[in-house]
Amino acid sequence: MTARPLGGAAAGLLLALVVASQSLAELPRRLRTLRAFAPRELAVRRLGGSGAAFDRRYFSFLENTRRRLPASTPGVALAGVPGDDSHLYLASYALAPVFVSVGPFPSGHPPRGWIVASYGEAPAAAPVFARLPEGALLGPVP
Image (cartoon, rainbow, N blue to C red; front, side, top):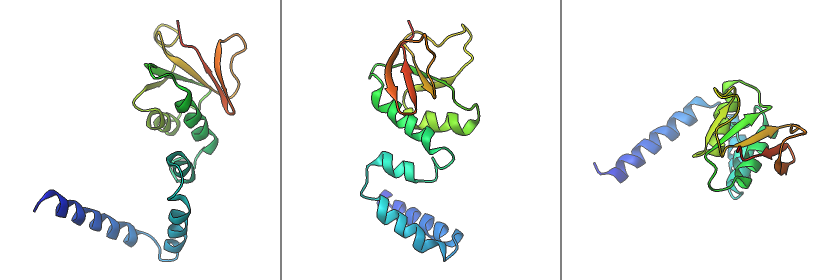
């Protein structure tokens, strides 16, 4: 078998597994959701999906952060973010390939050149280079 038929068979099997694992009453609602979100921008589709459902405001913060990061940013230090794995995973996914971390840092501050993405209120004395509806971007770290 070549790669194309093998890929088609794998996709068909995956579709069958998804359909089999859902209640039949749920399928029409999911199809309506797919139809409504399919033509929209990727960030809007992700915002409407289940991956960001636990904190949609936080996903919006990450998307706004991603759009305003300078291209040369080596990393983003998250501040004011809940410390659970879900928030860190979503940040790593949304901001990839930029490295993402939540302190504490060994030196007490993020590495040189990093941007601090402050979710919520930004520290008063910090150099803000972008205000976001959900927070602010500070830095880069000298």
